[in-house]
Amino acid sequence: MHLARFPRKFMAHLPTPLEPLPRLSAELGGPEIWIKRDDCTGLSTGGNKTRKLEFLMAEAELQKADLVMTQGATQSNHARQTAAFSAKLGMQCHLLLEDRTHSNNANYNNNGNVILDHLHGATTEKYPDGLDMNAEMEKVADRFRAEGRNVYTIPGGGSNTTGALGYVNCAFELLSQCNDRNLKVDHIVHATGSAGTQAGLITGLKAMNANIPLLGIGVRAPKEAQETNVYNLACATAEKLGCEGVVNREDVVANTDYVGEGYGIPTESGLDAIAMFAELEAILLDPVYSAKGAAGFIDLIRKGQFKKGERVVFLHTGGAAALFGYDGAFDFSGRWVAS
Ligand SMILES: *Cc1c(COP(=O)(O)O)cnc(C)c1O
Image (cartoon, rainbow, N blue to C red; front, side, top):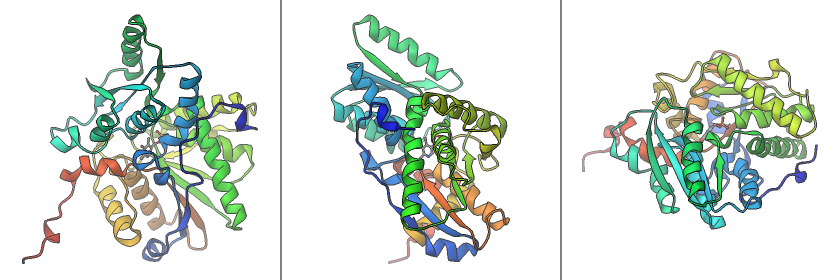
């Protein structure tokens, strides 16, 4: 398997750091916890979509696109990173933002990732939820094409076989960091949504015969649907790489017990995870993805699924920019002391 056969536009600050979390590990009294800092990929506050976009935007450039389009929720980290990458390459960016949470909060609708979309020069269009957003995007793209624009469309989350290459590469990077330090890893855990991250990781891990179980903590879809999405994308990615059949259905494991009321709606356990990571390790999680991933991870440690004597890597996929759209989820009244 040789990733350099595929066009790539370098943008992310790589390798991202792999660091121990001693205070969180001590607090939980379970496995030794490490963190892979993909929140530090560098592009406009970073996050996991930058790795995927290195391969996607290289295709856009090869096609001489002058307009890049993608879609996501209002506070989409993927939309923000696509807007930033487009700015860097001098391409116009148009984003379709789906109202998945029905929030009227002004910060949710204008701050956080949305202010960054606009700062990078992207135009945005609001959509109600429940539509097939990739189909809506193709309709809008066809309108632009009729006006003579050369449009490159990226599916939600950048999750196709091209985007997943970014996480095949991350699997290589992580394993080589672990091998260089002689750090034996027993599990890898991360938040899983549009499936590209988990599909790329499992393809890379299996292709290298790493024998490290990977667990995705779901943020939206039910277990069966999530695992099927990841498995199908992993199979297609393996085929693109010439290692067809390397991923088995049982290699793809998602736990979707921590979604709560739905996508983008904060949970109590997620908010607790945000507080723990911020106060013990000075690491910022986001309420939509990484906090739900961390909440699942913490709960599974407490239930004994990850044990003392084991070493677990939590892949931090980013998202902290969304915090500024979610100030309404927190109650900090007790932090203000009388003067
Ligand atoms: C998109 C995203 C994820 C999920 O990654 P997928 O590849 O969509 O499964 C996790 N965390 C953050 C912060 C994200 O923005």
